[in-house]
Length: 197
Image (tube, rainbow, N blue to C red; front, side):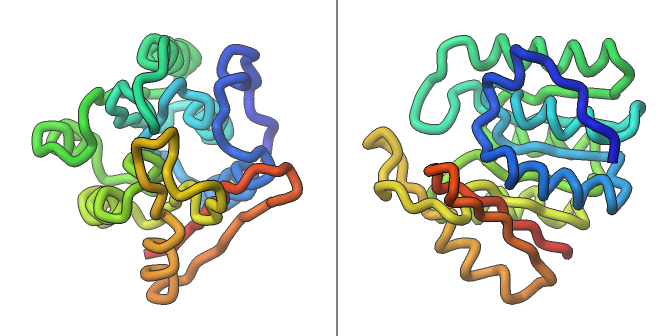
């Protein structure tokens, strides 16, 4: 796998543990992914890193609420828009859908770009929310990854949203071929789970 193009702006907005994200990227490259969907991109850090590991000309779609987990993140949508614009400049077919991932109009806008080889779900972290994203977007990708499967911080994130991805992951992973990347050595408790449909 070639090294992903680095950009200081997007590298500083990365919300994932590097070793976990690289595990996912290795799978996407090995599986020859050229059509990628990320549900929940915030500033665009992971989207940037993943896209740049895929071949130029790949279709890259971000679906984001514009708010970010735990509340509005100042500058997040502007950063994500800039990320999408830059990906288009360097040879990708990148698209941004801003809206609640569970609303019919948002789903319809994302579906205009299907099918996907892979989807990375990192939006609503409550059980019902991640389940709905799985049901709405999972059937349109042969590989589906979830962020925060190893979450061990307090159950509530910024006293607003429950983080119930680990429970959802435990409920579905046994039904599929799957792989987990959880690196607690960094002091962060996130994790990425990947399934093949």
